[in-house]
Amino acid sequence: MTMKIVSWLFLAALSALLLLVFLFHGIMNDPELANKPEWSVLQGVDSTYRNDVSLQRITIVKNVGSSSLDVIGIRSTKGEPTVWVLASPQVAPLVKQMPQNIKIQLTDAEFATIKSSVELNEETEAFLSNAIE
Image (cartoon, rainbow, N blue to C red; front, side, top):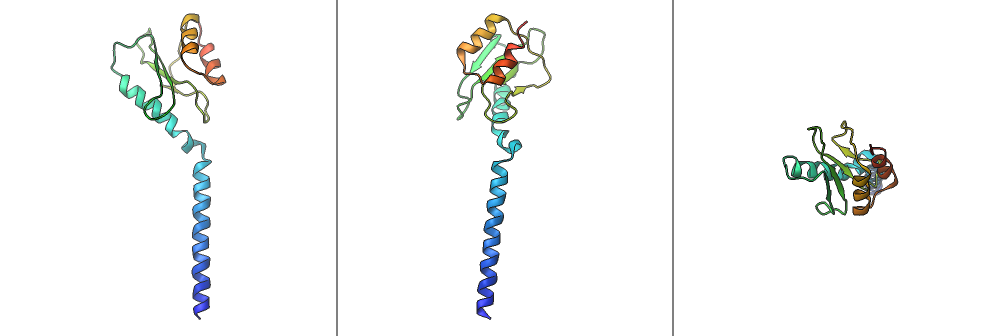
C-alpha cells in the first residue's frame, strides 16, 4: 500500500514538473509576451516626453531605462503627437512605432542624422528610408 502512495506521489510530482516546463517553454516562445518589454520602452518614452514642447524635430534617446534600447523621436510638423520608433527591435514585429497610425515624414538630412546617431536594424532602416519626402 505504501509503495502505491509513493508511486502516485512520484507521478504527480513528475506531471507537475512537466507542466511547469511546458508552460515556461510556451511563455518564452510566445512572441506577444516576448515583445512586451520593447513596447513598454516605447510607452515609457512617450509618457516621459509627451508634453515636452522643447523637443527637437529629431530626438534620440539612448539606452532607455535599464535596457540597451535606443528610441528615435520624430516630432510632427502638423500638430500631431511625436512619433517614437524603436531603433533595433529584436522581436517581431521588427518595426515598432508609437503611435502606430501616424505617417512620418523625414528629409534626407534627418534620415542621415538618425543613421549616424543610432544603430538601426534592416527593417527599421527601410521603414525610415521610405518616409523620406
